[in-house]
Image (cartoon, rainbow, N blue to C red; front, side):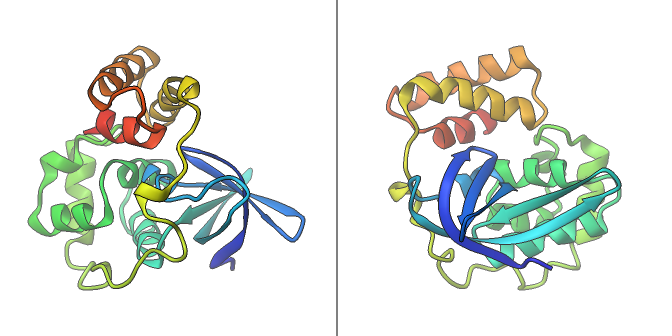
Length: 204
């Protein structure tokens, strides 16, 4: 079991990170909330991980905190019909604190706004997880050795729109819908906004 990976960040997108550990490059699937906290390329980073095995594949998922990793595991293990891709989509739209609050309050409408999730799936998430969260995911400490969102590196402005559209498409948006949402988000955020900032606005 791989519980965490610490090394040098080689590459990142809003939904992926590549970390080099002593010459071996590990590709990880990550939520936008983790991507927004990554340091610059070539910097040291640590992500808490969980690997998902399938008959024809194995995927490594990374998160900025242990609590986020444990929430991801809880969702895919306990909620019928919710796999890793949908779980990453949920965690890309809302912070762990917001997710925990929405589940505790039974806010199905908020959860159902996530791409790939309908009302019935949102209801299942609330029913299955409401009594299992407890205090496990309350914020306790800073996120590993990741920088704050304000310190995270921003991609080249010319690639922001394209990367954001690709990320939204991966989260379940149709190409045309993703393009419209990103263009609107850029107009709100301004030309200097990072890809992660644009995605967050587009998902809101």
